[in-house]
Image (cartoon, rainbow, N blue to C red):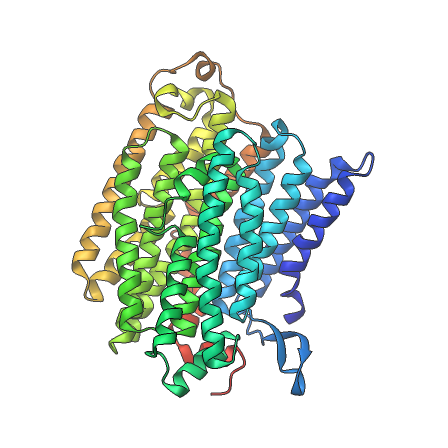
Length: 511
């Protein structure tokens, strides 16, 4: 099974180059979409086949004594969960793009960049060393800069430029931290860095504290945590809908939150300082994000602010779990916090991607995404409206949809972990989220059409509906279905974060 892991990167990466070649071969351009979808589907199948399998680390290159030095690939429980999230959303978004992107020129370029970004995000989650994780984060970011600006209008170009500038700032912080850690430990492998820091009791040295600050700051910027969120409300609305879904549903998780979790739990080790930083970032993002969202009338901008708020739930849960472990508390309570955070990360990928794709359908069919110019879409676009309602109910935490269960687990975990005020804030944010999406239902789906284009709107093409349907099904069954699937999907992922010694062993470091 280990041989399948590199294919998560090699498959879409190779297909991206094939798409570029075929686009310049007469008569072959029409096959690029089908081949790209096949590559993403194959990745999703591989991701599911790897779940629950105990895989040994691989060393690409196999240098050094006993071939034990090289570019390390690790596919532990957390990597397996992230691979499923990335490729599930990528498949739905790519199918949706098959019809949505027809109004753009050079669709093959979009497909090539999309596949490159997908390959890079898979690379992020299977990298066993910090430098290669950084390289893949940068490859995904560079592809996303081009995709945000794909429409080449002034709004898209401005958003892409702001995204690029702040992305470079984040990358500079991350690379500086990696350089400092390498100078201190002589290692790039995450597990070996962790072992070296623990053995030398270096976690409180000035150099390591500087590296910690740079890593957390850079990754918080990649995650769009408040107050590092300025790029996201412009980038997400400006991008084509499939890319908005990928940015919100996957990229800020793989390049941001996942990397944060890896660094805090598997490199630095959960300590009170890191836990406090995560809790502050998560709480401020959760609260400020939802209040900024409530006042928005641009549908995609409203969704962008909700991305900040909902990822605040995840970071807060991770911080609470780290805090419990740092003060020697119950592993069961810490595990509940981590399970709630991972579960909500999975659910957010489904319902937020669904909402962004639905907003793309609405914008394409009506010519606007301003809520006051919409109305009556439940009659004219019944399937898109149904999927939009499912996504709205899921993100608002209404039972029995998936968002309800993950938010409930996070709220209970916060209360049990000794954070009752934060639990109350999480309930308040859930209520404000519901109010925000009542506005969407009232102005976009119900009422009277605001413009002639809205009044004459028709249902989206079949491929767009198929992409919506995939994610809508996950939102509907992703709650109750998690009872039997909890250990299969999240068990090993939680253990990877919860038990540092096990994570070190899985990464090939002697205990």
